[in-house]
Length: 119
Image (tube, rainbow, N blue to C red; front, side):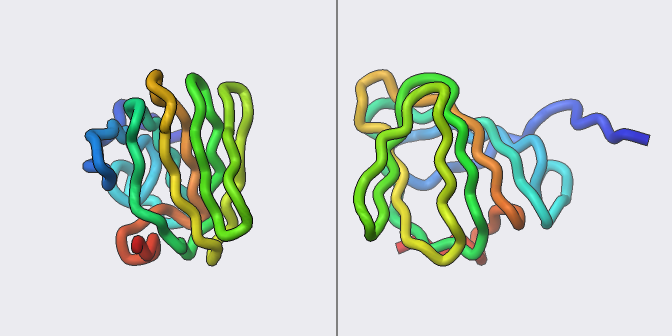
């Protein structure tokens, strides 16, 4: 039988400004370790520490734009676009535009503080 996820769990975010994370599927809300799916809303000017995670992160931008820095350069991901950050590569996410961003993040395996390896 399919399992209903009735609501997300709000999770505290890293970064210089408050960012809203609502985890629908993952280690916290549904006790899943193989995948996490979260709805993110970050304000303009938000930036988080760099990280070298042990998971792949797929990000679909719904509104605004997301800046993704890596050792190979910087990408600007606009609404309607997506980006894949592979496990083991250093990345830093930010929303430098005044309007911020709204996006969905999917991590395989699921996000955890033990495997994100923040700077």
